[in-house]
Length: 165
Image 1: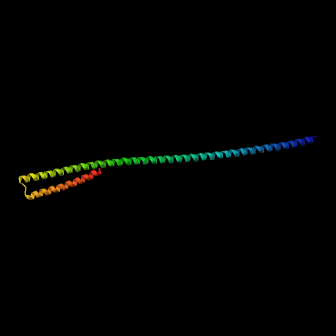
Image 2: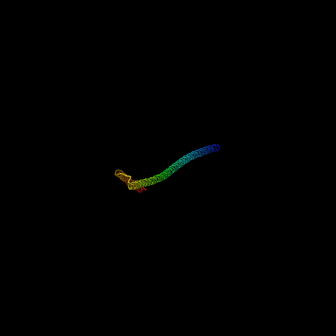
């Protein structure tokens, strides 16, 4: 019986050792599986973080492009407004210059008309007084004709300037 007891306890011991080995194997496989799962989770988290970072970079790039586009549009608009102002100033200068030219032309016409009146007055008075020779009379008439021609040219210039206005 003692031998049987020893044999029974030996088989118990062997069975118990086998159970312990199974439990240890299970624990080691569970820890390795847990470690693998942790690594996979960490890797997935890294991939997700990388994807988020990439997405954020894309959004930032898009925002930068949009801001650049808006800046270009604002610059273009500012240039256009500056050009319009410059053109308006140029037109104002042109109008003022034209106005001055017309005033000057009117003054020239008035001057020529006074000269014609003076020459005609001299011709009539000197002819009545008998101071002029026939050659001098012809000379005055020629001078009056030239001055009248000049008056016509001045009037044509004035008409052209007024048309421009």
